[in-house]
Amino acid sequence: MVTRPETGGWAPPVPGPPGAGTSSPPLSGSLGQGRGLALAGRTPGPCTPRRGSGGSRGRSPWRTAVSLRRRRRRASVDAGRSARPSVSERGLAGALTMLSRAALSTSRTLVPALGCLGSRQKHSLPDLPYDYGALEPHINAQIMQLHHSKHHAAYVNNLNTIEEKYLEALEKGDITAQIALQPGLKFNGGGHINHSIFWTNLSPKGGGEPKGELLEAIKRDFGSFDKFKEKLTTVSVGVQGSGWGWLGFNKEQGRLQIAACFNQDPLQGTTGLIPLLGIDVWEHAYYLQYKNVRPDYLKAIWNVINWENVTERYMACKKKME
Ligand SMILES: [Fe+2]
Image 1 (cartoon, rainbow, N blue to C red):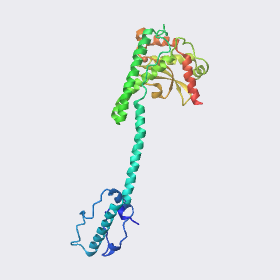
Image 2 (image 1 turned 180 degrees about the vertical axis):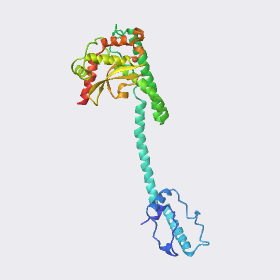
Image 3 (image 1 turned 135 degrees about the horizontal axis):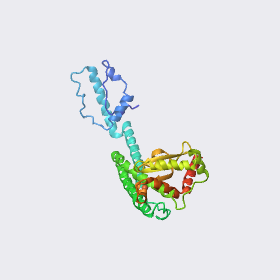
Image 4 (image 1 turned 90 degrees about the vertical axis):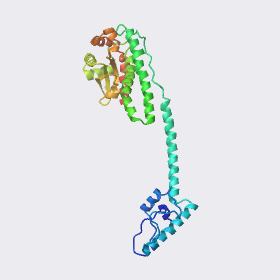
């Protein structure tokens, strides 16, 4: 059984009485194997001076005998190496081959994945399902045109720009840059999500009251439709600065819930509620028509709420819970 080659030619001190070293068994076990792996790259020839092996001068006879035995063993080991690789060398070569294959496999997996990110489709401004002037007299065409073609478009463009930068930061592993981009991602991504929902929540054929299961859920969770309307109006008017009033679905409780969000914070991303109906109370949504009187805008918007769309969203939530 060849165990010494695994030590790579290194021999630990051999304590013991005179003569004991000449018949001691070859070292093996974890220490020898570990050393063999660590030193596998070092293959000095039989004449290479070694630290601590400077001859037998001044040594006792038994130490000299041990030293001679080590030299013979080293010569044998090094001669063996020239003919064939040692166990540890073969093991290392195998390990390197495995590592190379793993690296190749990883790169094969990673590169297409990054390529997929790099070739992602950009976000685009959705078309309105009606003309800019279709919601008049409740929301005029000028507001709708600016709101959609300028404000929402800006969120989409900024989101695409930030996502490109975020992708670069991901590829570089630049976590600081990723963190620095996150507020912009939240603001512009939220703006895109919120407005995309908002346009479909409105309709020139809207207004009135919801029907069926949504109306029943509103009565169950708010007492009556009028109470719900009053509560959502109050919450929306009360948003300080810019933000949104929302009717959301709490999937944990299976109930409707009203919430307010600041800025462009997306409802689901910040509260967990699934958005059903959003009311934009940023000044850009009403100032050109209602000036600073937000409550008048809130009174008017109920005339263009698309209850069919809100009901579809509610039913989709219920279906997911089944
Ligand atoms: Fe808006």
